[in-house]
Image (cartoon, rainbow, N blue to C red):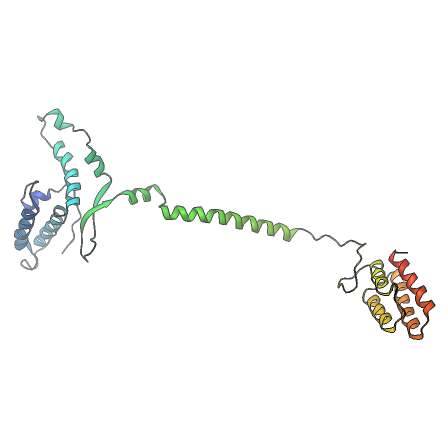
Length: 264
């Protein structure tokens, strides 16, 4: 059976053979009487009967629902007034817009499911969502999500921008006067290495273990400068003087290391 669209220009009262003030019981009785005459089961193969039955179904769905019938009557009222003959009174020819007729523009009658039943029928549906979609407006949920997402996106963009600036900024060269204590891993200057050795052996008695540790420290931090060569020579002197117990050589070597470190 074809489904006929709701048409406010159709007189559903006239289609069912009832008056505009007909109660629900009279409308139901009129529908049953006409359905017996045009039901597809009783008119197999008749396209005309199927179409007439489809229009009867629309009329019943509109007029038996209180809200839908009220909206239909509001749409139908001004149309009947404008359809009066030329000799009608001026008050009827140009009716003022009533609150009810203005309110009817906020709703429309659509074919939609009914709560609690699997069947659908023509019922009153608000036009607010349709108008918002036409204006490109946003519902409340979407607006809240945007309020949360926009600040987060801005913070993330700022973070990415700062990270890019740091990645392209050239590294600052290390100071040539840096002095490092024993145990640090990067390569200091000769002065820094001498300072580290002096802190190890200053005011310490001659010791083979201490001399070997100081010499290894010097070798790990030496370079090709003349000062570094002098420091390596001092490391060898510390080892030799500690091995033979030569305290004088040990003390003079410590003094020379103090001079290389800039402490004496």
